[in-house]
Length: 433
Image (cartoon, rainbow, N blue to C red; front, side, top):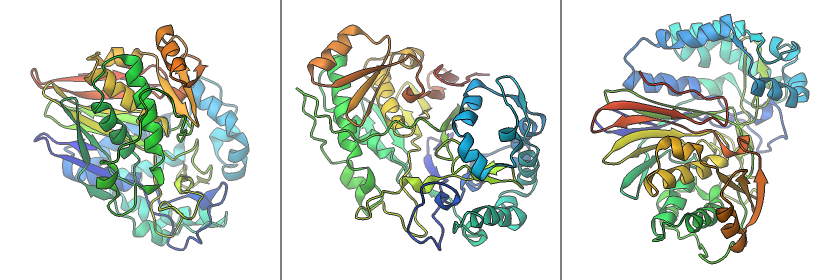
């Protein structure tokens, strides 16, 4: 999501299609779950319109990290351990998986570094054509998947206007479908109708609205669904929890927010879906393929059904927000938790008028399959009120990954100054220059 210096906002959907020769059956794991990787093309397309530095210069820091290495974080080593069986299947030649990587050990990825260097010089053609495209096809066909070099050659980024909705004097711009960011707009629309500013009441309505919105998740790519869903009332009962369930509790994804003093603001979410995606390595390029086809509905009767040359609904939900005071990007990892974290942060900032840092530091909640998880340390009064309303409340440790890790960057209109704030719940970083 990009807001330019003149206030124009554009959405880039860098997800890819399922293979043209996909047979309609999504396997449980492996390269047969991969859609076309779209990140390289999306970055190049956004750069062509908004960038000012040479593409190779922008790739250089990533090249250095790959070639020179970086100290492994505890979260990386834990992920390697969790996914060891899958990595043994699809990435047995990957040096990082074979090594005994402990926190602090320097991780180097020379194959990835060399591929990034080629992209910096040749652009996306270095990825979607020639040797890299052929290597992707080999890796996938080795696991009986259908993704081909022709699928990569035909990939195109989807560029369009965002979905936009008012909320408490601000305009919230969301990534259109196939992103499920529309679910956050649906919940914010319900909260905007609520006259009470009492926190327990607003949390209750947000939970109920999000559970109601998730009931429509598989409809969002249907023709005309955007306008129809933004008018849907979600059937919130102000007096009791309905425990409608809906969201899952997966925790993956990387979020980026940035801004410059010229007025450009960018909100971006990047993901191969599960940890290490489908866990199939393309050894020539040192990267993993996604398992984005797991986003298709397993029920073949709904709109979001698995089919050839189709984008599954995905969780990536970057937002851009504008009001009289500021323009800012806000994004978080967390799969189905993204729209939940974003909804409660925007309610805290725009309704309760909390500072960004105070909103990020506040204890969070997350609903999953009818249970309302609350971060330890949350106010006893709030928990008591939610129990009284009939919510099935369960505590999770403070800082648990399921509560996301939001990043915010933007511009203060009055002074033209930039701001950046990052969550401490995961590996995150923020700076302003």
